[in-house]
Length: 332
Image (cartoon, rainbow, N blue to C red; front, side, top):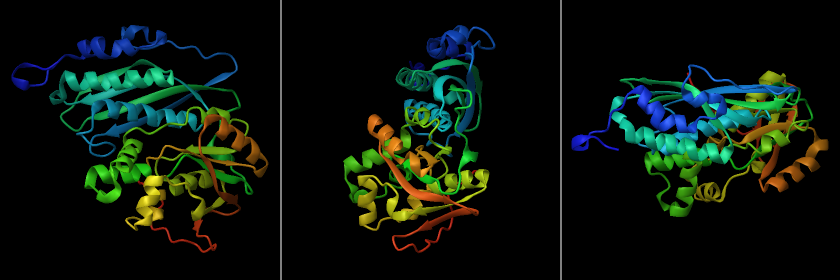
């Protein structure tokens, strides 16, 4: 797939679509031969749509393998669907790529999309492909469905609700530091690889999200950082929350780092890119939440409580407030 003298093979827009992306199209995508797609929304269902963009040097490293970039792009959008309790169906893709990347890069990118399409049961509907002299810029719009009235929004948290989070927190932040800075050299390859994987290949909780419909009062995925995203729920719901630091779920790799005092736990809660589900539910739902988690073989931890007021507090084992300099990633 390479051109002469080692230069990347350059192909036109329509050849790129025909060769790499048309095989990914679902029935509604019409073979990517038209300017738009056709989809049906069954009676009693609502379409849920979300879009995220990723820019080289900001959201991923330019040297990252293109198939992993593709997987992350798709997965962060599927995570948004999961956070509303929706089942993923389709996606639209827009790429702005330098000609210097060549056909081999695009082929690898499309291969990553195809692998994840099969795993998550989604299909490409269409999009756009343009050239740029700047950094690679990728945008994906994901479409899912949820029964009307069963969607879970950010605005439903109520004082007295428990605060829960799936999986573990802080691994992606640590994985980026491993990649970018060569940090935690004494960690060992197994732990280092696990952290890097969490950064490059997040796991959207597409099975958990829909199972929480009718159970969770409010939900969001952890993209900017656990404390920042809980703050979004609180602001939208008009309430406050207290989080207990000892209850935050950390992975064995993160705990090993904390034990060596190589980092501090607050930074793991503000680094972002976890793509776990953070949700609020009444205490009466503790049993059913435990059953759902067990059925999915997924760790879910109760980490705090919703209260009257505003803002998010972090407290230690003795109930003392822990200082927070910044709650999470800021885009601007």
